Length: 344
Image (cartoon, rainbow, N blue to C red; front, top):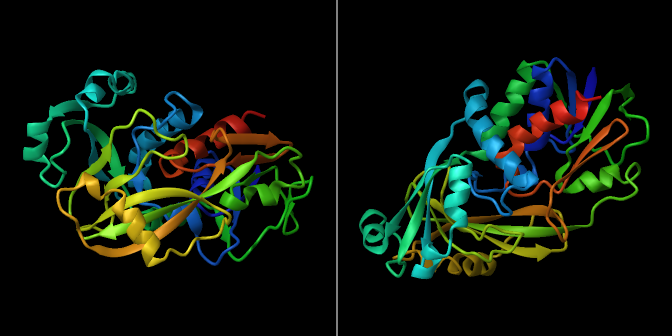
């Protein structure tokens, strides 16, 4: 069977990887001159353990994707740096009134422990001493998204996949034909452009909005993640914090989330970077220097922020695969292969 994939981002490439492993013939059409444009590389490279809402389709795919990253990283050839999350809290009531964290951890086999304020100050010196304690959660990972995409695309080609660059597919027609080739299935994994490409075959696409996440590279050098425990986070963000940088010796502070009107990569000003940077400085004992900054654009199925994967005829359309799409990508590729294509 022949499958075409529109988009050579993390979802398209991991879908191709699974399809090729199952014996499918796969062609990938990428609009740009390179792989991984936009959200697939404009992110901090964090492999997540915690995702709200708990037990959602998104969360289940994220947890499975985390395991599959560790399973496939050796075959594909990318590195995963192990990390732990230090989830700090300022109120003792947060520790007493937060049973959801331990229940979630035990249910999904994630190891964690609680530490008090004195222990926090001794072990994690870089954290602001105002905090009363923390949950320390193991199992996180940091990857270089550029390396991941490069190695994954090379492995896809080694397995027999073909990638065609500078092939911008504006829209698809009822019959699954691209560039004069007929396919058994077409997967539209074009990130923020998925709805545009699918508009001729999907009469009821989800409503979507675009969000930007500003990330500031700082001079701080730590090997653990810092974030504050919050029972009332927005459904559109995990809150941001301090994340080890995949290129070593620095950290990423952010991402800061806000709505924008464009799906294109957003150019960040110095003032915007400093504003985003300042929002998370309270987590730290001392203020680091700003080294650089960048921005990622994510697409959100609004207002519920649930992931939607539609099957319309011989088309598979994943809509709104935003954060934690990087973590979930191996599981999404497997799901598309085994549940949407093989289950004919």
